[in-house]
Length: 396
Image (cartoon, rainbow, N blue to C red; front, side):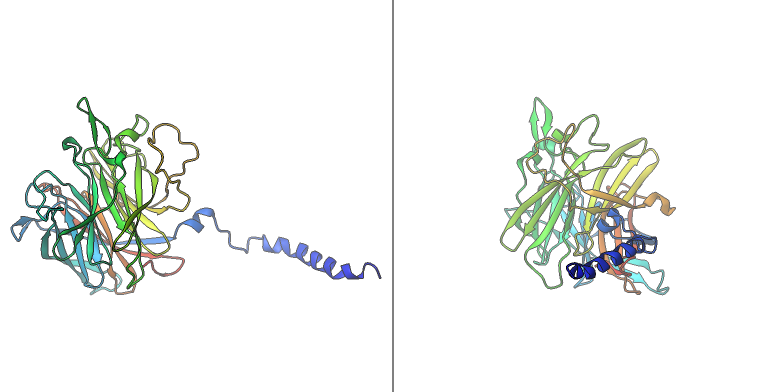
């Protein structure tokens, strides 16, 4: 009788051994590491709309470098990439009318301008000509807009991320920026900081719950590598090593949480310009999109990626990103769409935001181009349907 107490255990072990081949067979779904990290996104192109050249309230409408959506009011706000050359630095309020005659294929029917708002500096005055280069915009739950500037290195003007009142455009506060981003010129040569027209192009708020105010997350990234991070292997107009900043923000404080490495893809052959133009948080699970845009003899090319920050190394204490970087993990990326495959002529796409729900309940994604105030270019709006296939539901 001494071994009777072990007999039930022997039976259980035998049963488990018999089940192992069944549990590891082909009937059990195999999930890759990539599938656990990234959403299985589906992106349907619904069409384009070209905004006619125009003036609005004595300002030339153009240079729309970034766009953000106000779900409560069903309005969009777009920053004009104007260094106060044509009119004071400003953002426009837009209304997009969606034609839902064909529910499965809605289109942008019209884009109507509602208002233009001048943004002011710490002294309450409009920015003087050549003192600001506005590029990114993001709506916050504080009834404010965060706006980023690339800075103007040739004039020793650093980049910024600042908060402005939604109604008046008045400056409210500036977020802390590490010193390494500020331009430093020695013997007439830029040796540190953002490159010319290569600063904080991308800006987004982390997705938040309806009604939530504090704290929220804010992310910004350089269009290309900082001067001290660029090298022949990773040049500023090539597969550059960009930096991405992550903030925690509440009504009275803004804390820099971390910094990550964003590695640009190799640009198309013959590209003259190649950079990260936008970031976008798409849900409350930490999923993001990024927009990489190139320009060369063949025109514009644009690629859309999904991002995962979870395993990325904090680079806040790394002074230079040149050379080998043992142990440094960049932000992970997955290609979602090469927009050159859409069969349309692309312009200088720089802005991206989630828009209103489409008739079938899915999320819309809106892209906009910066026409550089060039008569040969257009302000192009692109409309997409965006959903996560696995959940078969909208991503926000």
